[in-house]
Image 1 (cartoon, rainbow, N blue to C red):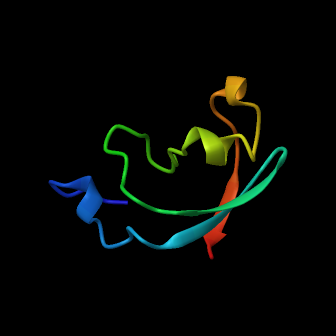
Image 2 (image 1 turned 180 degrees about the horizontal axis):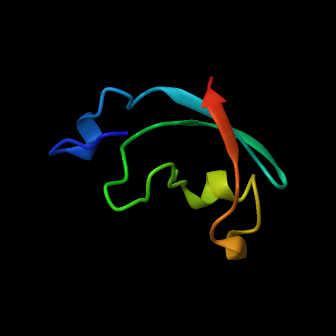
Length: 67
């Protein structure tokens, strides 16, 4: 996603995505973009991440699609 001056104003904010990880899946709402993230990264809340993997895993491989 391209980030503008305010990452909270990205037109994709408010869209939902389904994410599948090593230990499960979760549907999340995009609330902002991550200017410091690498291309293709998704920054999740701890609650969402814990549905996909153990928080101690830090970074995991996922598959996602728009819900």
